[in-house]
Amino acid sequence: MREADRRWIDPRDNSLNLLRLVMAAMVLVHHVFPLTGRGEGVELTPGESVGGWAVFGFFMISGYLITGARLRSDGGRYLINRIARLFPAFFFVNIITAFLLAPIAYQVQNGTLSGFLTTPNTPASYVVANAWLVMKDYSVAGTLANVPYQYAWNGSLWSLYYEFCAYLLVGFFLVLPAVRRSIWPMLAAFIATCALKVWNDQFAVLLSGIAFDVVQFGRLLPFFFGGALVFMIRERLGDRFPLVWWGALASAVATVALILVFPSFGGQIAAPLLTYILIWIGARLPSPKLFQVHDFSYGVYVWGFPLTQMLCLFGWAGAPLPIFLAVLVVATAAMAVISWFLIERPTIRWSRGKVRAFGDIRAEAR
Image 1 (spheres, one colour):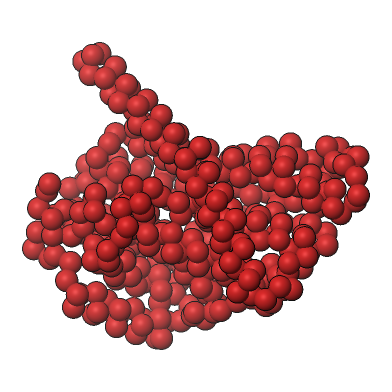
Image 2: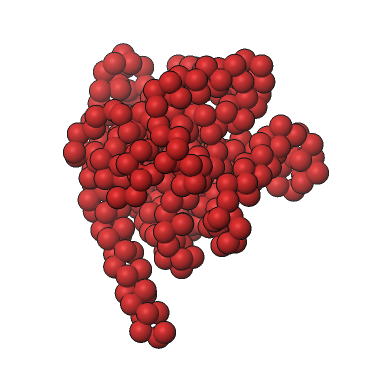
């Protein structure tokens, strides 16, 4: 094991999967409030909810881990593994939603399945329209008309497009030898993403055709590139600056100060500090071996929303919150386990086998 690994975080013995699972659960709980008609949930900082900060946490940890993955592999291997990690489970939840959950909702709503396959937006169009991670269509055949949050089957999936774009940006950026050799190019990239957030309104007007994407990139990319920057610092300086509790404490104090002084973009500026805190927690917090080996967080993230809608469909929206959450957590955990063992883990293993075979072929060609 390299010195930086020993002084920062053991790649085989850490709690990052557990942290991501907690963040996925935060998103799940946050969505329960608007989906059941109980308001918008808890706002942690001005304009950002508990669920929003959980998504930011995902982006920071992903930025840290994905940068390491890119540095260890060539572009082809990196792209295959990133596609295999996001797309199969995404298709799985959309197909099951369109062809299993939506028909149930259609039957409950209309008393018949007649017309289900031909009523816009059709199940097939739902799957096809959203095939490239861009959520262009949230409804299926007019279903979910009788729930508090109408016509939306999965509002969690919107962030995956931006995450995959971040994968591509870091992947292309690290093609450059200068970026691999030095901290400064990644620092410049992080500053550029923060500038996108700071002057978000001006950029949105300038690029009005993609104004929504500009806003979301400015909101999310600083966290991803903040995580990437921390990994580059660890690679270059980790042997001299190990993870320490007082570093995490100082980072927390500085983060609070930045958010108080700059409420609209202080969190983005503090992204490297927040990443340091998350990695420190991941290195110090004990985690059951189950979660070190198996990553259920993605399944919880993508299944929580449609299963909440199904409970609302069957009249549970007004149930006491503890009972609603207990049933939802059990159902979501079951689908997350199915997603991991049936879809995610086999695909990840398949992609790694393909990557190894690809590497062998290239070696033979040389």
